Length: 122
Image (cartoon, rainbow, N blue to C red; front, side, top):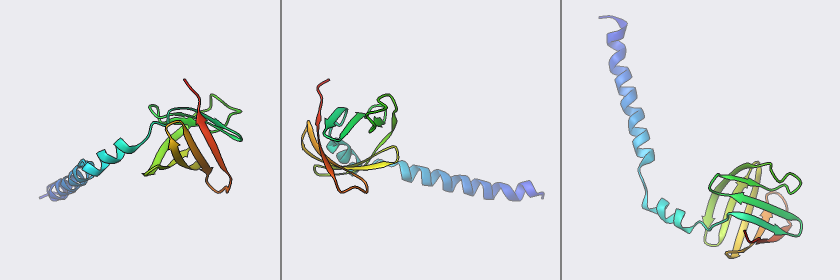
């Protein structure tokens, strides 16, 4: 027997393990669906004294720099716990507390200052 005959069972075993990891990792969880339902609609332009955000959740893009309105960066929601949302715009971490669907208090990672933002009507 050659090297190919010995390598085939090992390769087959590796492929089966990889397939098992993929299937286990992709198995839907009921809690995931429940968490997705709890994510509030953050889309739109949010403004307040000292900070402006534009969030486009359908494209997973956002902007936190009012001086560059067309510069979009990746937008990722990290955690949602009750009315508190932790999200990332580019390299910046934000923690937001939603008081109603059109108002949020935001702190930027590493800064003590908080900003009250209201959603501008579309």
